[in-house]
Amino acid sequence: MPTEAFPERLVRLIDERSPLCIGIDPAAASLERAGLPDTAGGAERFAAALLDAGLDSAAAVKPQMAFFERFGPAGIEALARVCARTRDAGVPVIVDAKRGDIGSTMAGYGDAYFGDGAPVQADAITLTAYLGLGALEPLFERMAAAGGGAFVVTCSSNPEGLPLQTAHLPDGRLVAEWLADEIAALNDRLGTPAVGAVIGATCGAWARSPLERLRGAPVLAPGLGAQGGTFEQAAQLFSGAEHRVLLPMSRALVADRLDPGELRERAQRYAEQARQFRDKGARTPA
Amino acid sequence: MPTEAFPERLVRLIDERSPLCIGIDPAAASLERAGLPDTAGGAERFAAALLDAGLDSAAAVKPQMAFFERFGPAGIEALARVCARTRDAGVPVIVDAKRGDIGSTMAGYGDAYFGDGAPVQADAITLTAYLGLGALEPLFERMAAAGGGAFVVTCSSNPEGLPLQTAHLPDGRLVAEWLADEIAALNDRLGTPAVGAVIGATCGAWARSPLERLRGAPVLAPGLGAQGGTFEQAAQLFSGAEHRVLLPMSRALVADRLDPGELRERAQRYAEQARQFRDKGARTPA
Image (cartoon, rainbow over all chains, first blue to last red; front, side):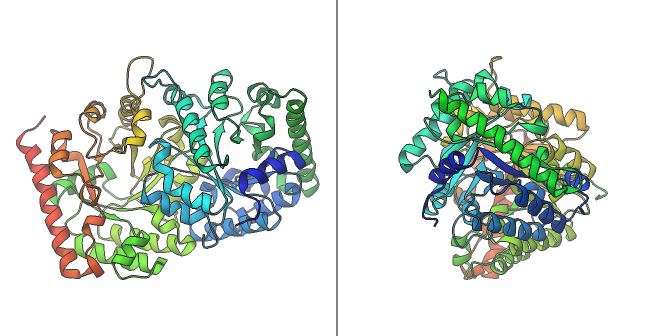
C-alpha cells in the first residue's frame, strides 16, 4: 500500500501540479492518427508518448480499459506496464473500466485491480451502479485495504443517460442525487473520501445538486477538449469544488504522428488552463 | 458469422435441449471447493469440468468475466479457450461482463468480444445502461454485424438496486420499464430480438411490467440455485414467456472436488427442472 492513500494524494497533486488528468484512449482512429499500428504494441507506444509529454504536469493518468481489452491478453499486458510506469513516477492511475456488478463478482474485479497481487495494479477505477452502490461493496473492501479509490458514474452529459439519471425516487430525489448521497454515506463509513463521482463537465445546472451532495468527495469530470466542453462550462458547474475536480483530456492531447514537441506543448497548455480553473476556485471558495 | 444468428439459435436450443445456462464462476472459494489452484489454469480446468458435465444439455454457457479478469492476461487466454470450445460445440457463449460506457469506448468493447478478429469471441455479452441504452450503440453495431446478441441488466433482485430501477420518469414509467421499452425499440430497428434483458428470477411482481414491455426479447434470469431462488418463483414471474427465458446456474452445478459423476448428475437434474419450467409455459401460452 502506498504511504499516502489515493484521496489525499489526488488532492495534493491537483494542488502541486494541476487538475489535468492524462486520458489514454488508444482507439483505432487515434492510433491511425498517431501513425501507429492498431495493436497492443501500438497502444503501448501511444501511451508512452503521452506519459513522456504530460506525466510531470498531471495529477493522474486515466487509461481507458476498453481500448486495451480489445487486444486481449497482449492488451492487458501493455496496460499493466503503462500502469506500472505511471505509479513508479508517483502519479496515481485511474483505470477507466466502468465495472458494475454484484457480490462475489465485484470481489473478482477488486482482485483484478487492487493490491500487490493484482495483474493490473491501479490506484482507482471507475464504476457504474445500475445495481446500486451497495452491490459494489466487495470491491470497496479491496479498494480500501489497498488505500485506493473509485469514481462512480453519477451524472453523464450524453442525452441518452438523462431519463435514468434524472428519474425520481419516491422521496423526490433524482437518481443522481440518491447516488451522490450513497457515495457520501459510504465515504463517511470509510472515514476518507476514497469514492468519488464521475460528473460530466458539460452537464450544466442539473448536476449541481448531486455535486453538492458528495460533500467533499473527488470528481472526475470528462467532456473537455475533443468532446466539445469548455473550461468555462467546468468553472460554472464546479464553482467552489475546484480543488477536488480532476479534468481528463485525451484526444485533445494527441498531436498528429505524436510529434514530441507538439505533445509537450499541448500537455503544458492544458495543464496551465486546468490550473487557472483550479485557482479561480481558490479565489472564490464556497 | 454463424449461419444462424444468436437470438434464433438461443430459442432453438432452449426448445431442443433446455433453458439451462451453464454459469462458469471460478471465484476463489469455488476453486478451493473444487480442489483446484486459484490460478488461470485452475479456472480453465474448472470450466472444462462444467462443460464436460453439461454442455450437451444446456442452451448456453455464461462465463463470468471478473473471475477470469482477476488473473490478468493468462485469465483472458483461458477464457478465450473456454469460449472457443463452447462455440465449437455449437453452443452460444454469453460473456457476463456487464460492460457499460459510451461512444467510441463501446466500439472498443464491441471489438473485444464480437467478430472473427476478437481476442475473446463471444456470441453475446451482458451490459449495463446507467448511461442510457443509446450510449451503447457502437457495440450494438458490431454485435449485429457478427450475428450476436446482448443482455442489458434491467431488473435485479438485490435490494440495493431497487431505488434506481423503480425510480419514476416524468411520464410515470419506472426506470426498468423505460429501459425495457428502449430495448424493444432497438430490436425493432435491428429487425431481430438480438438484445434481451437480465431480469432476476426472484424479483417478484414488480418485474412483470418490464418483462412484458420487452415484447419477445430473450431474458437472462439469474438467481436460482445457490442464490436461493426457486423454479417456482421463476415460473410465476415468467409465466407465458418461458420459451425465451434462460436460467443460469453456476455454484449449484459445482460438486465438491468436481466429482465427474456428481457434476453430470447435477447438470442433468437442473436441465430437467429447467425443461419442466419451460414446458409448463408450453401448456399455458400467454
